[in-house]
Image (cartoon, rainbow, N blue to C red; front, side, top):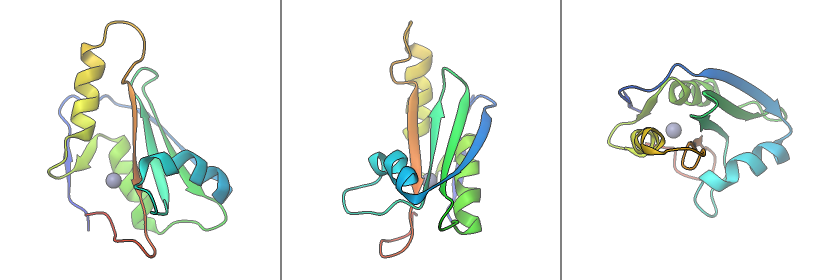
Length: 117
Ligand SMILES: [Zn+2]
């Protein structure tokens, strides 16, 4: 299982789970995965709107751990050793006006590619 650590000060976000056709999920999620990797699901954070959107395939519902993984991200948990979400929050707090750097995302992928660590 993937280890997680909570980002200090992460806001209590409203979480929305969207089950959409695989094509739509890929459109949403492909920008977060490395080239050649196939996304299984992803979570998008919007610190300005204080919401977290999880995108999942309705055609091929992801494994339970994938859903749980994205839910943890929405609750403010990042992968152990990674500071992507903490940096996002810090930039958001430092930003004056506009919602620059207030959104970000994370993904889960399975299949032919290596599982996230
Ligand atoms: Zn993740």
